[in-house]
Image 1 (tube, rainbow over the protein chains, first blue to last red):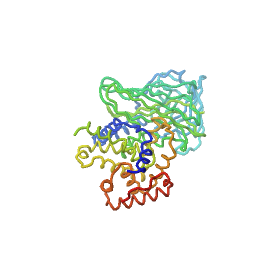
Image 2: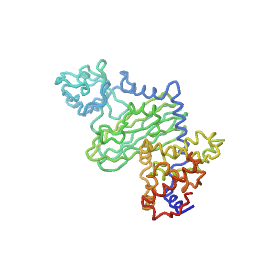
Image 3: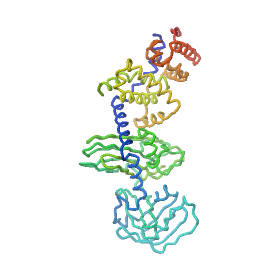
Length: 322
Length: 168
């Protein structure tokens, strides 16, 4: 052996190895699980895609709660998506004012009118709108939905998400544009899926404000399996509304990355947790936004196919980027 | 043959495997990703691998193959980035210029030369063992060693190296 051996050894082993055999064991288990899912009669693909389709495009919405308190509706609502446009055109919004008037834009045409709410029913009168011929991918058809006196509901609990559902015209989902106080951390608890004996719960935390140029924690989460069965959870997140050059993850939506993940075996590109009953996992992501990057919401996505049929939970938290 | 045996083997070979792949690709984060991919394959095939004449040789060879594949597709790099993000910034170990230079010089060698240098002078295989490991003739190993040493000199490592290296 020569000096070359010593030189190579110093270069090769300058840092300690950061993974353990347990990390390897977990990768093996993930691959086994993925293969089982892939060869199963009802694959993860169809479970996840089906769940997304239900959440986004089925008229009979799961999780919509009625009887929205009218005062809670008085604010500016920013359109997120509809059952035919996702995401909604930039600038699409609805202002429900406390004097009973409303104004807004569907991204192409603007409108105004009057509104009242009773239970889960929004009633719109004297609706007037411009009639510009809109490109198909910029027309949210919000005027048509409002003219049908849509049903109203919230999604995912008191997270500030509003959905307007018209029987014939489809639906539009909104997020409250008022992010509330700009200090501190928003902590949100979501039951990702309910198994025998209890739910798998995610508690995630996002800052209300992040500063451009600052490298900081964007989201952290804790997953706890309170059920009596093993659970596999995929978790991902994004800032919605970022320009393409600003995106830190080009696969921003489960609709897009789901098939890619499963078809190409890239599921391990994304944080995936295999939780035995009683297990808890923690993780976090740090990001740095360059100049000129603006977004509106932190979108957290949690998906599972265990311990019950697959389900996708998505949750948006307003964020201010300064 | 049990999973405990596989775990024990992975524990034993882990550091050298990461070291070899660090030299092979010049990037510690990538090397750790590739090493884990390698060990997953070892684990999954452990009943067969454990019966081989040299499970360690099979492991290093698999690692080298993955490193070669990585150079063609840089998917693991993205995974490594995510891994690093999830685990926070890498510790500043105050890299010596020597370490940076050696990693860079070795990783820039042509594939065969790089594998030969790592196998012989880091992992400690002799010419015959390196030939088995890399599935080539002993003469190829000797020639690649000679060429690699010349390239390392050209890369400016001549002063640091004791060039009285047996290339026969």
